[in-house]
Length: 396
Image (cartoon, rainbow, N blue to C red; front, side, top):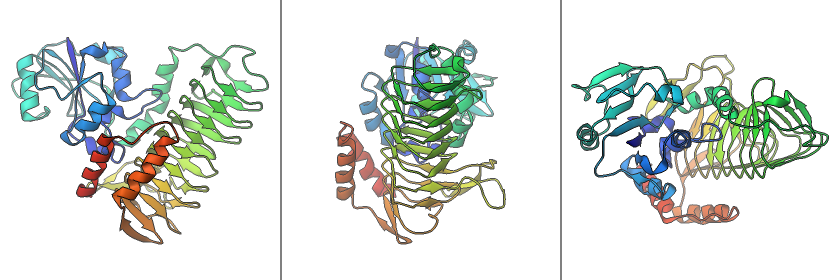
């Protein structure tokens, strides 16, 4: 039986992270949405359904998967913005049925004929699913990036259940609190680090370095090849692979390959890849009047209904030293900030904000910098990435 993973009807509700990747490639813990789904299915049985504008980058990221197939078989269709588990997948056995959660279709069990209808007419929604059975189910569905942040404790708890706790005597002069909830894979932890797992698991992946006098308070995930500077404080956060991290991070996710080496606060935020925060960069995550944080994107303002919410930063963003990021800010991919005072709450894609003025990025200069940044981690800027940013500049 085939499995088809789709993005959903509102992929840009995950802006700016979804600008440069399918929604299902967003990190939810040690895994992305897609990696979590693939842990339940054979990879060769999985195909991916994505927006046309990112199909090239999706094919490059997922060479072992079929992307946007022209024909489909009988199969299971799963939303790539749901954190699936064995229990919820077990609810999807009824044939020729769509499964909804809060009026959104999150899954379907379709014949080849109905699957082709999906392909030809666009993704199913409640309006065009007439004639099929419909079943309401309860799943961990994410509508926005802040929903992913809220689920960090649950996601990391589920992931830790498959791991072996750290053994006694594994690390000298390291303070562990609730050691049975701490999981370390072939990494180096320097003396006088404190790891507190009383509030949730702490998972440290392979080839990671935790600098002396750092404090990790679970739930926390630290990805492979990430370096944590001495005196760093991390709480309730997910740090992806190959990052350099310092200062204070709380209730945030960093997709990967990002530098936040220096002092400065990052809270209740979602950060993409290849981002560089200059020394002292700090974000606000609370309005002075204690009102819920409102987010502006896609021409609309959305009330998050959350008191603490920081910033959402796309790939390849750079900030100068001392940058102050406003509460509920959205910073589009490929942008650069070098300006005194608080940043605007919206910084467009591929723009420079310098001395309180906006200007467009010159793509050739952007590509040159991006190539140098990726080269430092033995990666290269691909043709598909360049094509995507050229499209983003036209749309900007």
